[in-house]
Each structure stands twice: as C-alpha cells, then as structure tokens.
Length: 253
View 1: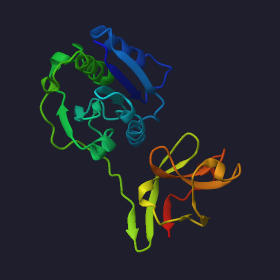
View 2: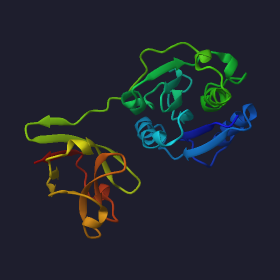
View 3: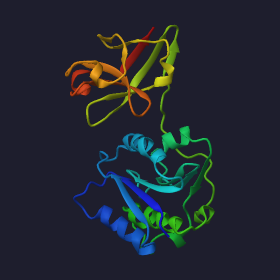
C-alpha cells in the first residue's frame, strides 16, 4: 500500500540513523513513499522542530503520516504518541514537537503508543526513532487502526507559544523564529495588522508593511507578511538577524 511518510529529525546526514529508520519502514511496507523534510534541526531544539512541522504538513495530502524525532528525553518516562487530525497523522515523542498542530487543528485525537506488537522486538533506550516511531508509521501506512496502538492520551505536552498582546493602539509581539535567511518571524498574524502600519524593534522603526521584497532596495530593512502568514522582519538579500538583536516588536497605527 502506497502511503506518504515524512521524516523530520535532528539526526543530520553523516550517520546511519535516518537510513535505519527508512529500512525499518520499508521492511514492513515496501511500497511506502518516504519523504525527507529535514534532518538538520539543531540538536534537541524542540521548538524549531515544532515550527518546521507547522510550515509543511498542511501541504501534504490528507492522511499523510509525519514522523518527527527531536527527542532529548529518549529513554526517560516521556511518552511516544500518535496525534490524529483532519490534515494528517503525527508520530513522535510527547515533548512539545506537536505544539502548533495541537493548537491550530480543529479536531485532534492523541494516543499513547503502548502496544509492543508494533515495535521492534529488541527495543533500545536510545533510538526510539528506529524502534518505535518508524515501525508504528509503517504499520499505520498499511491501514492498522490507530486505536490498536494504545490508549487515548488526554493531556499531551504543548510548549508555551505566547500570543501578541493588544495594548491600546499598539500590538506588542515577539520574534519566535529565525530562518536560514536571517528573517525574524514574529508571533503576529498578518490578518491582525489591518489599520496598523509602523513597526518598531528597539530603536529601529519601519514605516509600513511591504507587499514584496522589491518594495525596498537591496540591503534595506522591511516588514512583510511571510509565507507562514506571520509578520516577518527582513532585509532584502541580507540577514535581519545579523542587524537586529531585539526580540520584542511593537506595531502602531
């Protein structure tokens, strides 16, 4: 049965870890379609994994299976889980990697993975990506009922993701993510900006929100609604992160 399984990890590409996960999946379902999202998440960076997942899962076919393994608590009492939504199925550790999925999906069911029938027989304490998450993804791709993997988990862990605050005529938000281009992604949704124009970070003031990068000359600072739907602070063909160290952002009318 052909079913898409995506992989997102902090394993890098120099070791055998990703390859062994793929081997487990294909050994159970040799028709699975495995797609690498990234294995370059910074080591143990749960928030970046959560934000990366937010950026891609909605663009995959409904029912795709997304395995996310950024797992500093592997071998501890943290739970392996499956998150089921209308958009897809998510497999990984219960440590906050699914925070945006849990907050933004309308219909969510979460299951703790406890049925050893769907794990590798020799279960290690250091590599649940291979021994639990990969085989569970493979069995799900073959149509095994999600309830067969374990019991419902009522309170999965979710990271604190603060919302912007409305203070009189101001919106006060913060930078939550810096991408590889040096763009500063904020927690302020673009649809919240109607009627607002001036953007301030520390002593820097941007007079308006640009429609595209070409609205300013190369090397100039701009505010723009990025592909994530969130307000970003950028430099045309440059890195805003190298210039700006402030992380609190204020929007005024």
